[in-house]
Length: 278
Image (cartoon, rainbow, N blue to C red; front, side, top):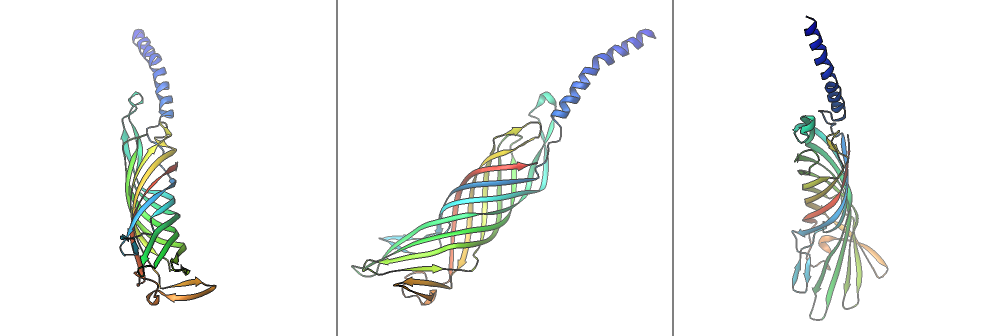
């Protein structure tokens, strides 16, 4: 009997350090990672686009210009609404652990987009050309849903999303000059344009913490497709010290766009970083 008791005490003595070490490891590397509460994204990039309407000609080339073509700054807030936990077998030394994965997230976005381009040189006669230079700046206010998939803890993630919203137009103008010497400016103030977008993103974690099963900062690249329509019913024409209101259908100097709708699509590539709060 005494030998059995001594044997049990010896086994307990040998097992105790192992249990303490395992408990410390469990506290430092928890099986359940902390879920992401909210993510903030900031990025910038460039977009290329094409209108579905002919704006004019530059020599013999047609100009199909999109107001989504140009430099962009984007700011977004991602809120996970359907979190999914996946098993992470990467750290075999400390056993299996689960890593939070955002299956579906709500994204609210805004930014500042500047488009300068769409210059046309239209021949009025054999010796007279009219040059039009266009500038557009707008602030999108959008809401959408993203479906995200991760390659694992500390590895890149990819997502696709759809959404829509309105565009607050800050600058919408055309500078028109004629080779015969005349010049004027059209300044448009359209009602709130609306748009739909599709997004594809690829994000790379830069600061992965094994104890959290998450990354604090992610570098990401995003490819976004946007469909946008806005309407111009009237604009102010300034020239020779005078300003007058002109209806788009009654403007004799508007050579090609004689209807109210402006529709275009664009694809933008954005690079930036994302901060995760969890």
